[in-house]
Amino acid sequence: MILNLANYEAQARDAVKLFWRNREAAMAKQVEFDNQDAGARGAVTAGKNLDGFVSMVQSLVEANGLWDAEICIEKKILVLPGFYRPTKECDMLIMRRGQLVAALEFKSQVGPSFGNNFNNRSEEVMGSAHDLWTAYREGAFGDDAARPFLGWLMLVEECEVSTIPVKVAEPHFQVDPVFRLTSYIERYDILCKRLVQEGLYTSTALMVSPREAVDDGRHRNMSDLTSLKTFVTEFAGHVAAMAAR
Image (cartoon, rainbow, N blue to C red):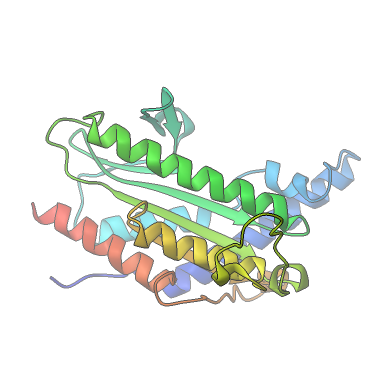
């Protein structure tokens, strides 16, 4: 099986540039109307910052033969049933003939408040995956449904706050040594690796990029397992396999 990765490197650079441009534009608009949200929240609440990655995934679907797929990106059709809660909204769903092919999440983290946000993101991503797979086990997506691709792509700002080692509190018990003196970016990489290793996600991608990448879209990966290349290769393979069925 020959996979088509749809020139993902160029698409990823464009997606990163779009991300930073949209954030800058949202912040400027908030300031113009004298209605700036607390901190950098104005850039977050504007939404659509990660649309470039949605386009990249759509290209991979088309390039690998799933011509009859329904690509869902509108909010009202991004809902899946849950097990511990009635429903769960994703950022992108790939459907085919009433079957769930893939569910994808695109998230970002920009400073300065990395601590609480990292914890919130961690709890959210673990809980969502556990809920989805339990619902899948219980037949929520059909009794004979093939196992879908569950993907999580995370873009984190590379800056001083996100790259310096952070202490951990150990008032009662020792934490896992792997977390000692790690930066928030390194902790995201550990999280992404373990989400895959523990079977909670089919694949994850951690992309690290500075604000200055608004001009050139530069970014980097932290490890092979959480690289964008691994993510798009595994996704393309899943799509091609579904197309061949």
